[in-house]
Length: 149
Image 1 (cartoon, rainbow, N blue to C red):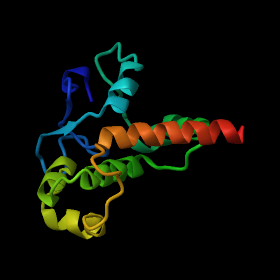
Image 2: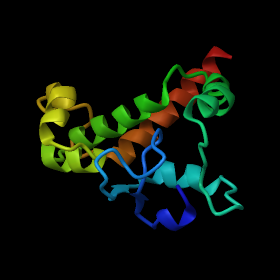
Image 3: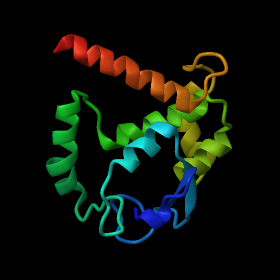
């Protein structure tokens, strides 16, 4: 992802993490950026014009993501972050078609097979946006982490 792909409220997705070309479906899409993610992006350097660069997915996972995950005391994979975003969009009330488009799924059927069980549940508080839920979860995790140290 380059800084040119980061807009005020969205990120333009032009390529997948494991592909040398475009996305699996060869489509370009925009994904909303919530405030906690904007704040994280603001802390990145990106002096070479790239937000981050992953020349080798496995190498990046071993050298960058796993140490960051250990330092943050979380047990998540990069792919789990995608599932978190999907779950928040569903809980926020987005339709199956909207979620499928945001995830870049080739068909809503794939979204239904993976996330269908979430469409009948609500993980957010009434009238709570995905952004507010993410901020609340971060505060909770920061308290939990500081109490366990």
